[in-house]
Picture 1 (cartoon, rainbow, N blue to C red):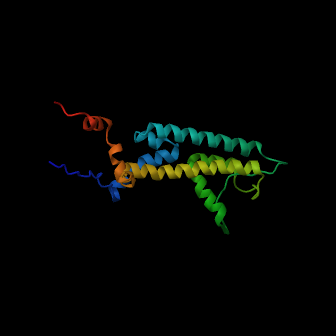
Picture 2: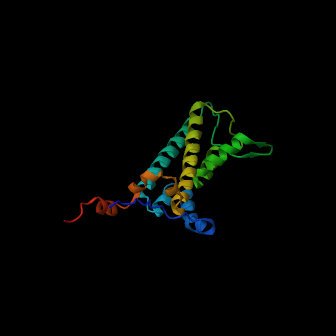
Picture 3: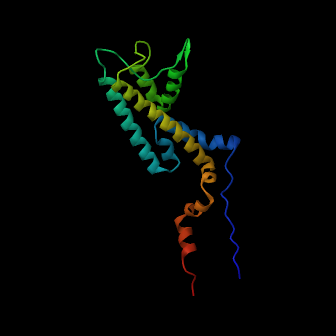
Length: 179
């Protein structure tokens, strides 16, 4: 007697309005407070890791921007330059805006008119820490979208789908048959 192996496909991902409905709240919460979106969808470990890394980077960025000034030269985070448009600071501002409302605070404290376009190295590191926090949070927002809509299952290789099954289902499948 031969057994035919049937591959169990994951359910199709949500699309259109259903995807938007399922994902907008966790994404917004994650943008407001890094990690909160993961917390809401039940990914507590990811939430703690993202929150911890974001807070560490924001603290390092603040300390380097605040105390890295040399001879009173003020440097800071990237803010959009639109008149005339300057692409690099504007793209840097879009990346940094992923940090959420904290970006507005950093922009108020360390950005805008009066900041030097070329900062010293310590302040550049501070601006980079804040930007990396924003980029990481944007990537996590994309990941939350994939997780809430079910798209991440389709990116997992087929031979690893078995590892994603519930632990109880795996135990029952691997248990020896009763005699």
